[in-house]
Amino acid sequence: MNTKRLGTSDLFITPIGFGAWAVGGGGWEFGWGAQDDRDSIAAIREALAAGVNWIDTAAVYGLGHSEEVVARALEGMNNRPYVFTKCSMVWDDHRQIHHSLKAASIRRECEASLRRLRVEAIDLYQIHWPDPDEDVEEGWATLAALKTEGKVRHIGVSNFDVEEMERAQAIAPITSLQPRYSLLHREIEAEILPFCARENIGVIAYSPMASGLLTGAMTPERIAGLPADDWRKRHPDFQEPRLSRNLRLVRLLRAIGRPQGSTPAEVAVAWVLHNSAMTGAIVGARRPDQVRGVVGAANFHLSPREVAEIEAFFAKVAA
Image (tube, rainbow, N blue to C red; front, side, top):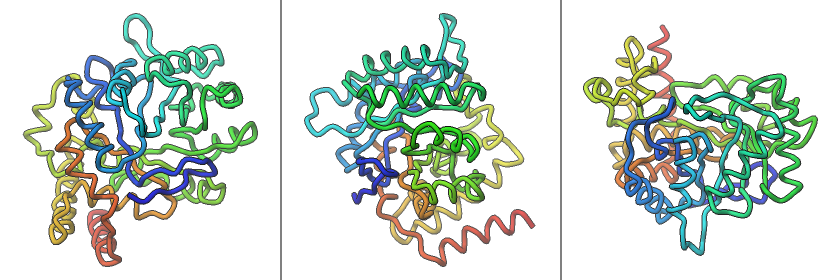
């Protein structure tokens, strides 16, 4: 795969990165249901064998479990990928999640992530959410200090708006932003992406397949059968009235990809990467076959006509 520089850093990343949210498993507030660690490790290794050179995880995914699984998958590897993780979402003894950007809390999180990932330094450390708002400056200053100390190589933010990024930049440069971005969620196009382009802030999109909805594997029956601890079961994108429209979009993506033997998932991710402001997209997978069904997005390029077809779909829906 080709690589692209992430912001002003020395990280050159592939168009697709492995997303390790789902491999954290179930039993927590934003879990995806039960997950076999053996499948997770096999999926990570499948992605790396296909040329993917970065993994994105977070301390909170599976309440630490995702980071542990990533470490197991990378054990013994000489040519290791970049590993990105996040802080600010913490949990208590009752597995209840809350947010903290206090310096002491972030330092504890960083040390715990280093232990779970079994690394001496984290390649990219990100604030997961700008919450609480009044502590954004304290949190970002702490990440800058961790970089100076060599515990993390680069620092970024996730889910920040322009005003929040400006506040952070007054303290230390931002390597990258990680926002939600897909055909179903395009809110960042108006202000956030132009700001990142002007400021040379890298952008790595999460949920480019809308949490699996645009893969072509979702049906009303499958959604109804999702386990109770899969957060998607409660999300409006997976419920009517949005669901029928979203599944019609999947049919269009399948038609666009068919001539080249590409899946709806690959077309959906390729659409995200089509935006020149994007550095890369995070693609989650729970099994090796899911990796094989989306990794081709790195080399799938939408034609102007195909982009116009997709835009016409949304114009018709909005009319």
